[in-house]
Every structure is written in structure tokens, then in C-alpha cells.
Length: 410
Image (tube, rainbow, N blue to C red):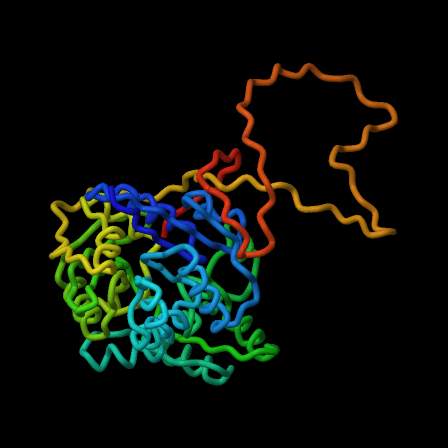
């Protein structure tokens, strides 16, 4: 039996526990050894990995690249899947290749284009892919003009950061005055225009937003697998319409995704998102990394993470065509283990009051109430604290853990 394929995932999102599961359950039954690093000791990816280490904090992008190069050398990493500082890491691809490590990420030029959504929209329009109307906004005046022009066209305006991932910072602008309507129920993405204007006027740091119409459903996320030769091997759409999810191979979504992946060299795994602008599908966003929901296409009989690792290792996969499309489904949260950790050290400075770990007894305790007999509980193994030094020896992460973390895949 040959050596295992060693894969490293750096600071990534929780849903990648499923990415790791699929690597282990690959159709070739190849042994895979997964290393994970993260800044959060409770990230479930640390527990899901074979070995895991905490990441150092406060590193500049270049210092992080040096850390990553050292990690690849020490761990003999075959394939590195970078999420944090992806742009700085792919710029030094040759240095990783010299160590024998393949980067499962697009070239630096592609990452740079899609890091800035305004630059990306301009670039994809040039190759004929439709995008929604958009405005780059940095001032109050620019915001008001953009909102008024969109509303004059019968659209509801929304905004998001020009650079960012997922739905972080996304808001929908309303003209409804702030009231209990905004405080009842769960937090909402809707925010009154006057509050946004006031926040911009009093901001102490610059903003860089894209303002555009609030696009209609369905949302279709096309997961693409592209070889380093620039040829797309796989393109499968995941549809989202409210709670309902499904799959599609409709050329209205697949053809522009393939064109974009090939035109910009989105090698390995990328995720290209579309929504409706009136009756036309338009590009919403491009992720130069595996999507959090990538594992869902396993319901179509496809193991995309393993196919991507094969391409990174120089092995040809051929066309990856789903043998069937899975049924419609929905997504619910589920528990995943986290690593057992000890409590942090208590403060012991002189003059600083400390609290007991147990509630203090009252002077005259109330009469005790009957208590049900406790059920037997299997104790978790004792745990050592995570090392403060990121270069400390890794701790096996497959040990049992009593705590769990809920995961809701995107």
C-alpha cells in the first residue's frame, strides 16, 4: 500500500468537515491524511482532521506565506487547499511547488480579478456574461444617487462590500422608518436608508460598497471543476428557492459558468453564483474556492473534492458527469464534534476578585426538592490545552469529544 495523500486545509469554514469526509471516502479507496489549522480552537475542522494545530495570529500576508511554506515542508503536504490569504499564497505557487506541494487554487491573476467585485463585474461583462446594474459607492452622495436611480427603475436597492465572501455585510435598503417592525422577530437584513446615511456620515473609516438591485430567485450556484489546462471537467448547478434546494444542468446557468471558468482560468474548484434580474439570469458572485455547500452534489453521485485532488496531483479525471440528479432537499443543522479543551487559566493578579466555580450557598438554603437519579454518562478522555505556539507538535484530532458544534451548510 502506497503512502497516504497528505492534504492541508488552513483556516477555513466549518462546512469543510464534509469536504474532508469525501476525501476519505474516495472511490479509489486511497489513503488520505488530513491536516487542519485554525485560529478557533472550537472549529469542527480541527476535530475532523487526522492532525491539527492552532494558527498564529497577527501575521502579515507575507509572514503567513512563510508560515505556510514551513508547514508544507514539515508535514510533507501533497495538496494545500488555501482559504485564508489565498491571494498571497497563490502568488508564490512556485515556492510551494519546489517543496512538492500543489496548491488547490486558481492562478494569482484569477484570484485578483474576483477579489474585487467591481473589477470582476467589469471583466465578465467584457466576455459577454450579463451582470446586474451596479454602482460603486464610497460616500453618502454616491449612495443616495445609486439608491434613487435604482428605485426610479422600480428596483429595491441593496449593498454589500466590494471585497468579501459569503453574505457578510449584505443589507437591503428600505424607506420604512425604523420602528418596532425592525425589532420584532429575528434580525433582518432590511435597514432604513436614513440609518445607512447617518452611519456613513459619522464613519471613522472608509467604506467600499457595491449597490445594486435586490435580485430575484432562484439562486443557482454552479460548482465547477477546471483542470490546470483550463478545461472544465465538471459543472453542476445547485438551485436555491427559499427553503427548497435542488440540482440543475440547465444550459442557461451551466453555459455562462463554463465560459467564465475557462476564460479566467478558475482552476480546480470554483463556485459561480447567478440570480434573476427580471427574466434574465445574471452573475451575482464568483468564489475562487470550494463552496461551503459543495458536498451537497454528492447526492448526484459525484465526489468533487477527490476529483480536484486528483487533478492537483497530475492525475486525469476525464469528464465528471453526474450519473443522476438528486431529489430536491432542504438543509438543517446537525452536530459535529469539537476537540476537548481545558478551561483557560484563571486570573490571579493581586487585588482582582475571582468567582467560585460553583454557586455560593445561601445562609438558609431552601428545603431540597427531589432530584431524579442521574443517568450514566460516558466520560470524555482528559484533554491537554492547545499549545500557544503554532509550531508545537500537532495533537491527534480524532479523539472523542463530549462537546459538539452545529453546522448549517451554505
